[in-house]
Image 1 (tube, rainbow over the protein chains, first blue to last red):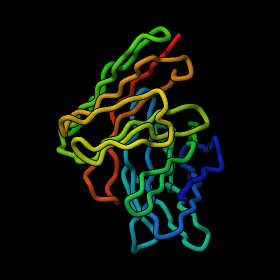
Image 2: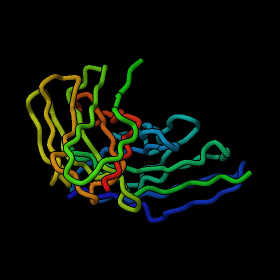
Image 3: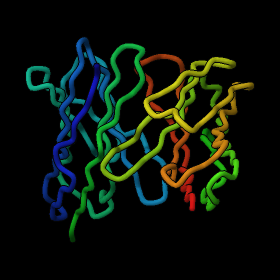
Length: 112
Length: 113
C-alpha cells in the first residue's frame, strides 16, 4: 500500500535563508509525487509534481523538489525563503491509478 | 476562471439534522473527490467518483453519502451528522489521468454540536 510521511510538524526559518520541508514515501511501484500548499482559509494549491525523468523538479513560487529513489524521499526546497511562504505544506503520493495519499502536513514559518 | 466551488464555507448544525455540502467544478473534470482535514491527520479521502454515476468509498466513508448525477456536481450528504464529523471538508477534481494534480475548493468548516 502506498503511504507518505512528513517527519516534521513544524519548520522555522529566517527570511532569506534556504528552506527544506521533508517527505518520504512508500510504494511498491513507480510513484507520482506532489507538493501542495495551503494558506489560511483556502484550499490546497498545487506546487509541483514528479512523474519521471529529471530528479530535480521546479514548481511555482520558486519552489523545487528533489526526488531521491534510493532514499524514497521527495523533499521540498527553496533557496531563499520569504515571509509570504509561511503556510501549511502537504506532500502526496499516487501509484498508478490509485487514489492520492497525503502526508499529515508541515507548518512552515518564515520569520523576518 | 477555472475553479472548484464549495458551499457553504461555514456550517454549524446539531446532531442528527441532515445536511448537504455542494461542490461544483467548471473544468469538465472526470474525477472528483471529497476529503476531510483534521489536525495531525492530513487529508483523508471520504468518497470519490471516476465519472458520472460512478462513485466509490475512500478511507473514511462511514456516515457520508455522495452522488454524481452530472459531471460538474458532486454533493456530500450527511444523513445524520454526529460530533465526530466536525471537521474541515474539501472537494477536489482532476482530469482522468493518474499523474494530473488535484484542484481543490476553498473548504467547508463543519461544526456538529
